[in-house]
Image (cartoon, rainbow, N blue to C red; front, side):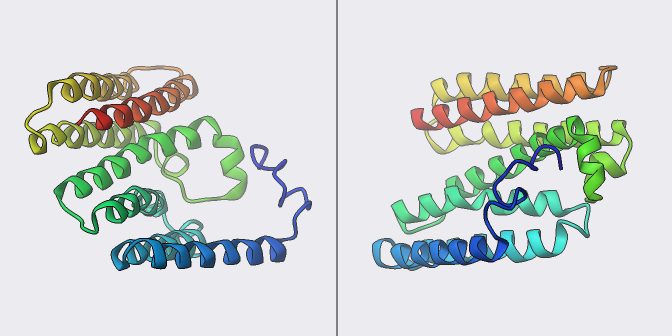
Amino acid sequence: MKRTKNRSIPKGLIAIRAAFIFASILGTIGLIVLYFSTNLLTLGLSCVGLFIYLLVYTFWLKRNSIHATFIGGFSGAIPPLVGYAAATNSLDLKALLLFLSLCFWQMPHAFAIAIFHEKDFQKTKLPLLPLLKSPIKTKMTMLIYSILFLAVVMLFPLLNFKDTNYSFVAGIAASLWVLINLLGLCFKDYLRWAKYVFVSSIVVIIVFNFAIIML
């Protein structure tokens, strides 16, 4: 792919075997550190995240299923749970909302990337939704996920005495993102709109994380 051809492994600067060994060593050290410095819940979540991302997503679904993006997003939302478990040694409703918010956010974000790199992704023949389904189907799916993200975002204050600062900041950011996804239904320039979704997704997740700090 054009967007990844200059990375060290595709250019042959780092051998695949060497990269695998290095990654395995880092992963093992990381798990050992978690075992001795946190708790078994944190260690277990880390193992689940690694298993899903490396085996389920990368080696199995990425090249075989249109649902791979969601599974990748699922594993991508686990690291915050790892941090939450490390700090509290528990998982509760707040942790679940945090997990769901990141799962739902990643879908429009990932699909937007696939849209404006469509020609590049087509070379890989990956079964991505924007490549296999019509633009309207993709836009509707992205809109639904952005609405789900907004819904989860607005549930956080209910767990923290309805914090008005969080509701104002995170609510406006998530609502504007829904609006941008909604405009896609009538936006003629598909690629340009996807870039708007991508850039705004970065802004939204940054604002969301700062808003979480207010809680």
